Length: 82
Image 1 (cartoon, one colour):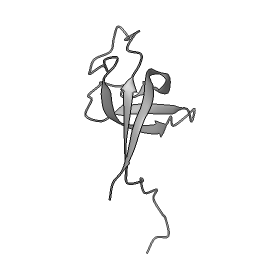
Image 2: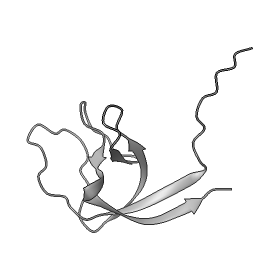
Image 3: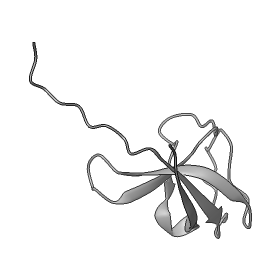
Image 4: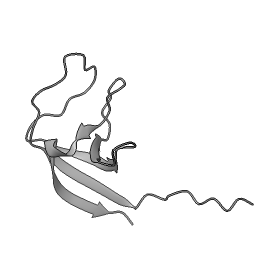
């Protein structure tokens, strides 16, 4: 039996409001958030830099995109799932 323990995500659903939808990259292919709308999100650290990135659940984006900078969103609510 392996003693490796994988990280278990918290039973938490996060919601955030988009506050900045400007400066969409010209080569971006996929869904883009609209300012003022609230989205179900997951905030994870960037693999290399450790800076928080916002992943909008249900959005599609081609690589290398898929996450948005944290300054584009404001936290609205955290719902603990039971």
